[in-house]
Length: 153
Image: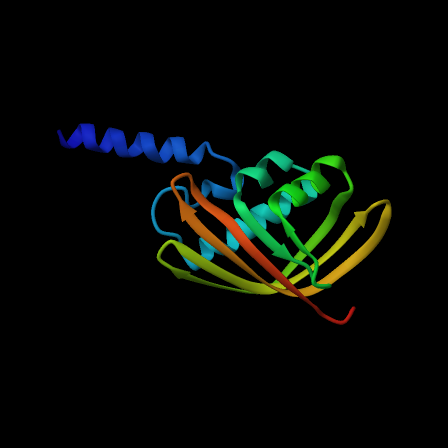
């Protein structure tokens, strides 16, 4: 009986490891602050690679984002911009990350800097951010994001 339990546990862990990168580290069990920071790094890597499917999987349907200029967007709008090529992230630097986990909710703060192309024009973003993740039946997902502009470096 004990062997069967171990086999089942290993199967669950292996299946979870096969999920999309953004959920892989914490699909089963409680997230640590380091896991939350890695979820964000994986998310930003997906943006750079243009991996819209990974971003979609790691984003709750109820997702809301508030840009540094105060523009509010939902998941549908964000994914349309990514899939259409309107928004392309060329590079990202994350600094000063600090994650806190409260059961099934995690809050991450930090500094986000990127080089991107939006509607054919290259630009840079420098902002302090807060992202909220929530654990649901399918693992951890981003549910909210807020940016506050920082002066250009």
